[in-house]
Image (cartoon, rainbow, N blue to C red):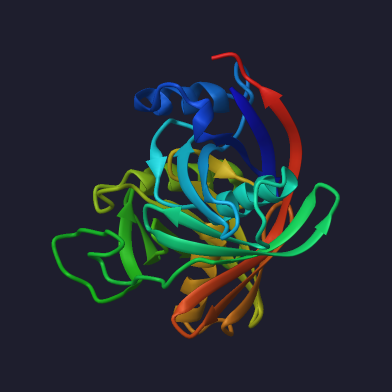
Length: 281
């Protein structure tokens, strides 16, 4: 199975053309084995792509987490897939139109420096209701802002948003210890109020234009960065009126820019093609 290894600020993916997969029914098992960091290639997820129209830049996109579960979307994953497509000259257009399970997403190439790419992607309209996230505590909520979620006899005010996938934001004056936020992330990810589980962002506001975020991703655990997570963290900060509508997001490995413009969220950030390989499966 031929693949490309690509990362965006340390959030790494294996990019595979659908023609390389002989058994789509067991893609979950393949993703789990290929993403294993000791016995496989190692990655946070596997991206399955298929070019539908080279001239128009139409590309089918699916994402599988390291545990084999299929996710709806990934901001970093989309940018990494775009970087791989541009790097291997599989498109004639400087704009990719990704067809995902949560809707079409447009990604534009802004800059290239050898194997490094700067890309801007439209991440859709943030959805805020409990039904759309989904979040189910037995009641309907138009928005979930500072909801008092109880975990191990402690209350965490959470703010939730969907960008096609569920996110739960927790604001901190200072970050908890690594072992503590890992435990919190693990507990919230599988909390019964989140029927599809959830991603968790731990956010520290630096100023009106800048935030710092730690990421616990559904089906993966800690990741060094997250595209949709950065968008969700920025959206939650904007909803709470803690920042302006254009936010610099600092991750463990670098910076992304997120902008809430009209009804849409846009994100710009880097992706880097690391190597190509051939995995025996």
